[in-house]
Image (cartoon, rainbow, N blue to C red; front, side, top):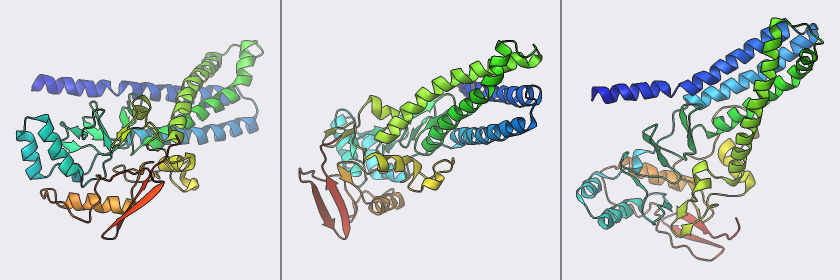
Length: 351
């Protein structure tokens, strides 16, 4: 037990090396820009002050969004997705996979779960012992199931998912703008040093290297930012982009796409004034998602989760609770009413 514990602690410490590297680069860039460029190289006070103001604005937004991405704990599934005590005991005693699936289907019938494994089975995590909510995946590094998991990023030493995906996209955006500001303001003095219009001083190395590093980081970050903006527009995660989610009625790579505007709102929220700030404004709770095939009333989904969460040991199904055994029909739209609850089922053929 002791050696494994030590190895785990060492691994966790090593996981912070990429974060330490990023912070060292940012710290050096701050020194090179503020001290070597603005203090020692730029002769004009107005130019120096304007550069410092712009630089610190983008640096603040960059660092703010970066550390929000790092410090936001990945969102986990609620206890409503755990097996009730009786079903859990049956599941653990049962050795036949078919019977285990029947137990899972019985429990999942009362949950807003519409995705399946590639073989059509209920998605269940043996490590966390929960039925996985839609878009939820187990991260072996974080050792937990993460809601709307996108990927585990070593540069932030954290899982990127429902709780911090907006922060991650903003981090990439502000990192790109930070590099643009550096390149745009440094290039004038970069050319002067390169063409020997300025004397060789200790600032020369820092300014030349600062321009190259900022340009290199900009190219790499911009490509990653472009990819994630494309994912936001399609309402997909990185995992879903490589492996299309499987629904009750088959695989659909665009199953969660609701149109560009609604897709953007899913991540950034429906109030534009919060979009540029790393504050949480994403829509939903990460446990249930509106899809192109099954439109769930959010209040109805919440009532389902609250019901299951309050009765973890009760295996009985409430007749007024939303079930996922909805029969999809080729009609354009159909509504089913049950005890005041409404579920809208919509079939779309477009991407």
